[in-house]
Amino acid sequence: MSGPIHIRPDETFTLNVGPQHPATHGVLRVKMEMDGEYIVKAETVLGYIHRMHELMGENRTYPQVLPNLSRLDYLGALGYTHGHVLAVERAAGIEVPERAEYIRAITVELNRVASHLFWFGAFVMDLGGFTPLMYAIEDREHILDMLEAVTGSRLTYCYYRFGGLYNDVDDDFIAAARAFIPRMRKSLKKYDALVTGNIIFRKRLEGIGPISAEMCRKYGATGPVARGAGLDFDVRKNEPYSVYPEFDFDVPVYHECDSLARYKVRMDEMEQSLRIIEQGLDKLPDGPIMPKKKPKLIKPPVGDYYQAVETARGSFGIRIVSDGTKNAYRFKLRSPTYSNMSLFDEACEGMMIMDALAMMGSLDLVIPEIDR
Amino acid sequence: MIKETVKQALQDLFPDPPPVVEELVAEAAAEGEEEKKPAKKKEEPRINGVIERDHAAHGYDIDVQLEPGQLLAAVMILDKTGFFLESVTGVDWIKEDQLESVYDFSRFDFDVCRVVIRTRTSRSEPKVPTISKIYPGAGWHERETHDFFGIKFEGHPHLIPLLLPEDADFHPLLKDFKP
Image (cartoon, rainbow over all chains, first blue to last red; front, top):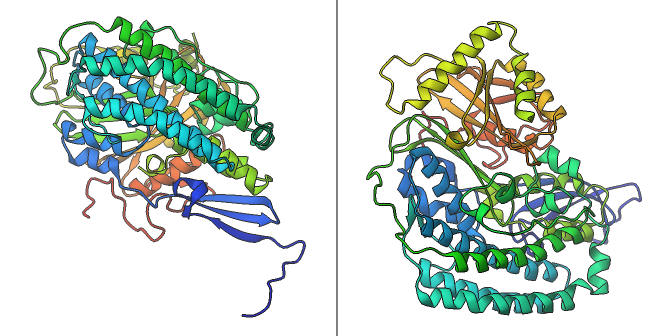
């Protein structure tokens, strides 16, 4: 073939974004039918990192599945493991000591801040600003160090056990967490001054990438995507679990439905998470971290059980169908980004490709969590 | 509040057996759950109908089992009352030679009400109407369920493998699947 390719004015061409593309943050592929720079039609292709965690959940006993859950979302893994232990505790009727629940809430919120920080850096980098990523990663590093000291790992935590925790927190952790809160508050002000008011940043996001409340409902989008569309929905408030009713925190809601609203929701959420951590550290009761009475072999009674939790990305649900044996009969994982991403095909129609990629960034995708 | 409204609306889908019998079934099921001991009596297949579940014990409120033909009517009720689609999945009941499709619905407001709709088909001919016309978000969920269980969602516009390879001819979550 020689010479340039000529495209007639009415002709469209197909553009493959991914599976390896920096803007997709993982192995995700979007087939886009383009008219110049405008997207006529998009089709998301998944499955490049599909590992069939649901089958593993059926083949292994309940405790053996524990490490799997942190392999879903490597940025906010604790939220997912929290959902899993809560679901099995509900099914098997295991009581959890109060101290364990408080530590769970504190660590989940720390992990949420870490996840949002990384998202913030990567999102601004998608839009061409490299500096905030460096700041964000430095702050995140403090959280990872803290969590590494108590959980033993930096990303793929396996910290929660059915009934409690694997390890109690020590004074060093509490001191580090207390020192982290003012530091992070200062950083949040810095990010706000550095990024939020930036004219290029605002022009790329304001009024761009509309996702309405009705669309969220039809596609089941939750988390910051729904809250950026004016829906006051947070599982921690709407369907309280663990010790969240004990905490005083707000759910940030923005009604603009654009990419900027989703950005603002996450930035405000970090402050709310800090408030939860602060209160959790103040209220942290003494006591055991594992219950005295705990079944040796976990065999939930026949039936099916559902548990939803609010992870950094939205409402994560887990359905366990038990047939009374030590393995789950069915182990369904409902991942939030799966639903959040499913609306992308419809939402990006007619948008310019750079705006669509900015919108994709604002959905906060973690691909292993979509593919499971 | 919404729980009663939706329960009544869904109850109306089942003209017979009459509601009185339905109540008895529901009560019997509720009692069966309360006594935690594994019941010795022979397990009977569940009769189609609406059961109210204890949210604290099960994590959802209303549990509906219906025929595949009634599915769209039930989903339309939920759509009208403002539910959002949480997920669609399947369960393989190989002993009863049945495949179950499970639909989870929830709400965005503070009136907590989780609804589970289940419908069973035979394993040899698993055909269920698609709900992707009502909830476009079901499109991906149904493709995933088709991948894993081979349940055919009739009327689905694009029922090709989503998570499995594009030439996959196996269904890994069927209980007789051999890798």
